[in-house]
Amino acid sequence: MQLSSLLTVISLVSASLAATGDRGSYTVSGLGTRKQAILNAGGNTLDLAIAMLEDEDMSTDYKYGDGKTLDAANFGLFKVNWGMLRVCAKRAGFVGQSESQWENGAKLNSDIYADVASRWDCQEYYGYDKWFAGHRNGATGLSNPNTEDIRFYRESVEWIQAQIDSKSTYKTDDTRFWVDVNPI
Image (cartoon, rainbow, N blue to C red):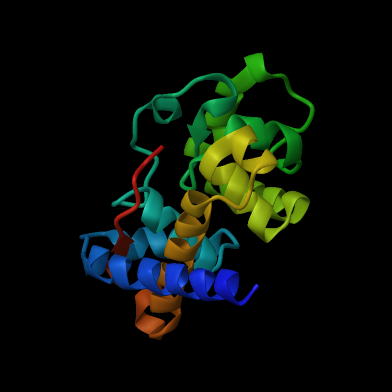
């Protein structure tokens, strides 16, 4: 039991030390406007952190569906997958839709209010940790939410959120915080 606890502590310390050089900040022109749009749509600093990690410009100008289709397709500033949206995004009207209706998720690419509401609806539905698991790895993540990759993704978003929360101007200026997280 003690060896197991010691190994867990060593693992956590190693992960945090290894990742310290793989994060930072820089300026992205116009990012403050995007931050304000998210906050004005009812978002908070967690939403800013997720969008900031998902896209350098915090925009939806990425490949349609994030290069994926069906339940794996991602939409909006937060790149939430259709498989989750059609289960929990009630305010956007997606609940109950089928996998084949995945292109309806594109609504989130142009409606920031629906986008923010959908992320909140889904986090409320799944809970904080499971939302991150499903967001990071879809149905596989929902059924196995405690992988090292999912944990690292969640902790990366939390680190970005902590940076934003550390100074009020980070909510409105062009500073982008980043962590080197491999895309899936």
